[in-house]
Length: 287
Image 1: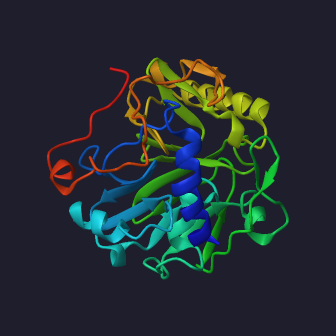
Image 2 (image 1 turned 45 degrees about the horizontal axis):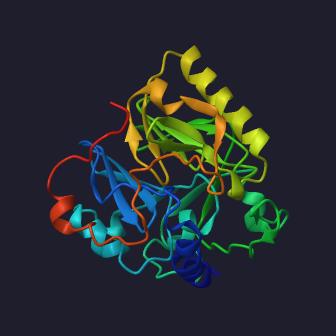
Image 3 (image 1 turned 180 degrees about the horizontal axis):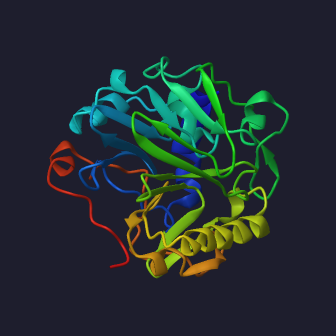
């Protein structure tokens, strides 16, 4: 399924969103000494490195340049033993789907218990305001099912799970070592701050907005001000910027769009090069 879905997004969605000032992914490179990003067209795949362990956060498309770009960062695909999944959409799980290149077949696959219901077929994923049902995703990796509020460790790396439903019914975000929050498709950064994610792709937009407000509250109540690393836009360490428009939706079909500086066609990744990846840390937004 991932090969067809990947090709569909590359061709058809690039037309749908071209010129909409929507997609603004990071390029391939390091955010800091612990976090790296690989750009796959409009999607960010993240890696968290601590000591001898590198954890992958989301698995992007079924993308034929993933190993090449990981090489730019000095990350061997064979070294990946743990993959945290925010949600099961093809642009976040393509590299571990059954028809993928098989770079990560020996890695454990961590996903929320509720989100896993898409993988078992109990629930069907719907997009474009519930007008379109997506095919069931098939993943054969060993799975670890996670629950809201669960905290666990991988080789001394602390990982905390927060359920943030709305984009999908079981969407998780991951707080790593109390400093890095990998948000998947919950927050969309515009030029003037964070919005709830793209309205046309949500299972329930009202729930998504409610969940985003609840996430802000959880972080505030514990005095946490992490780096926010998004699935399709940039990263920031500015808490107020991240939640600036949490009650508003990113809509590709209205005149007001999140970022007029976004590229005309973000599926054109000609500016994502090895030279850029090695040139220094990736710049934050909202500073």
